Every structure is written in C-alpha cells, then in structure tokens.
Length: 308
Image 1 (cartoon, rainbow, N blue to C red):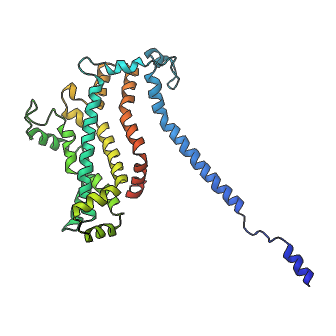
Image 2: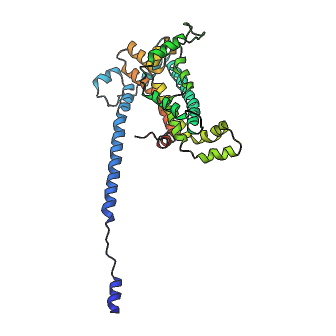
Image 3: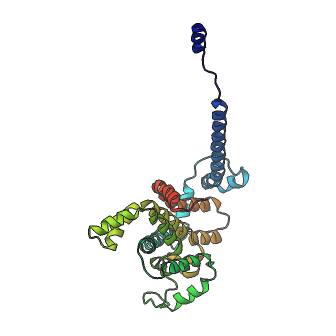
C-alpha cells in the first residue's frame, strides 16, 4: 500500500488546461491588428510621398514618369521658384499671415473656452444645464447658415484703420471671434475638468483660495493634455480654412497660405512642382505642432470622452 502511494505521488500531475493554443490565437490577433494598422498608415502616406516626389521633379518628368517614381535629380530650385513666384509678395507673406491668424485664434479659444468649461464643470449657478445645452445646440448649426449674417455683422462693425471703414478686408473676422468662446472647445475642456477630483478644489477652498485661484493653479496645470488637444484642433482648422479668408480678405499681401495657393494655382496653371512644393511647405507647421504635442494630444482624446 505504501509503495503504491509513493509511486502515485512520483507521477507528474496531468495537464488539464491548454494555454498554448489560446496564447497563439492572442498573438495572431495582435499581429493581424499591427499588420492592418501598418498597412493603413502606409496607405495614408502615399499622398505625402507623391507630393514630395512631385515637388522634386521637373515638369517633363511629371507627365512622362509614374506618379510615385523618384526624380532623376533633386530639383530643390522648385521651392525657391515657388517662394518668389509672385512679383508683389513672397510666399513667406502668406505663411506669416497664416501663422499670426491661427495663433491668435488658438490663444483666444484656449483662454475663453477654458474659463467657460471651468464654470460649467465646477461652479454652481442658475440655469447652468440649460445654458450648456444651448451652447451644445449651436454645434448642429451648419456654418453656411451663419455665413451671410456674419458677413453683414462685420460689414457694419467700424474699424478706422481699413480703407472701407469696417472689418471687411482685414483679418479681424478670422480670429476675433475666437475670444468669445466656442461650443466644441467648451465641451471638450468641460469633459476633462469633470475627471479632475473635486476634493482638490474643496481643499484649496478650505485654504482660502478663490475660484480664480483654483482655476489658475489647479485646473489649468492639470488640463494640459486637453488644452494641447484643443490647440491642435483649432490651429489646424484656422490654418486649413479657405472659405473665410477668401470672403473677408481682399488684398494680396493679406492672403493666407490656403488662399495664396489657390491664387497661385489660378495664375500659374500647370506648374505642378511649384504647387506641390508650396503645399508641402504649408504642412510643416501642422507636422511640427503635432510632433511636439503628440503625447498630450493622445492623452487628451482618451480622457475627454471624444473617442471613436
């Protein structure tokens, strides 16, 4: 009896589970996801690769070689031709105008939307939910609906430094509105402020801090991911806007990059290397901004509730 027990005790325990096939299936799913993401990323890079190769080709190579073929030589002179293509102004004027307008619009949205979001998320006042619902309701209004009313409004607003005496022909309609808040930025920052523990504000209030100090010293430093996300969105929208600058700007030295490229395309038909060089240069600020704020951008999207 003792020998049988000892012999049974010496045998290895039978294996009941099968973890190996499950881990293989998990690894296969993960590998397929990575393959799909890499394939999608490479597919989205094809237009940028085409822009880069086209900007370095001659006009003869564009029509005789395949679209994604590499040029026979690196013709960097296309960028200088693009930069000084117009006799009145350089492309740098359009570039600096877009930088100023997009920066002012971004600053205005960050300042006003963060204050409004703090009020709707932390402070208590009458009709708070009704006012927030009305602000969100403005998101469903197409911008084409308010295009003519805004034009009439800017036409009657006085501005003595313009030739017409109003805001038309200046860049004021492109960025002043940003200092009056926005529905999307308010909603984005409010969703992030709601994730911040209220105990931090209560502790600061016990220590004697007023609402402005709580906002400036607690909520703003903790909301850097959401602020970076809103900054990228707003800068991108202002930088890529074509319709509003086309309506309000009248003189060539006041044009932005989008209007300048459209004007360049109309004046110099067929100069595809110079056109692609200008389009590639106009993308550089967006690429640099996204690379700098990428970490905050991903975190802000994940924590603010704007997913999918």
